[in-house]
Image 1 (cartoon, rainbow, N blue to C red):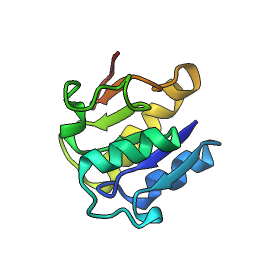
Image 2 (cartoon, rainbow, N blue to C red):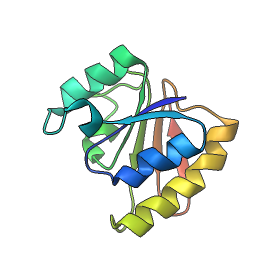
Image 3 (tube, rainbow, N blue to C red):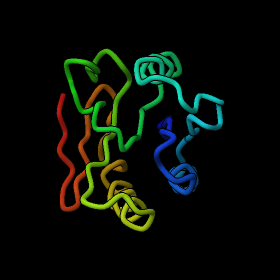
Image 4 (tube, rainbow, N blue to C red):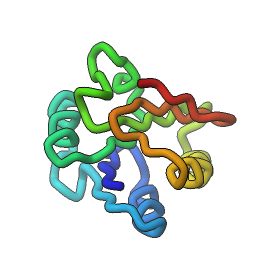
Length: 117
């Protein structure tokens, strides 16, 4: 799968996804840091990449319909430190092996992954 990692996530998320065999680029890899959400959404759609982010704005299905983009994974965690984020992403990897977030919204919480279409 192809992923775009938002600038609000540590670079280790990109490395973790690559290590699991995915094609992952960060927003910063493409000099898109500071770009507005709508543009990031459009770039992900054009590149057919699933966005991974901490930005809860992307959980708004009216503003960013998953079917209109290419898929969104929002990390909604009680803490946003690197270790908590990396633990959450480690829990997501087995889910990715069974199911794709393409054209869906995944909300990754501490204890579960909610999938919305």
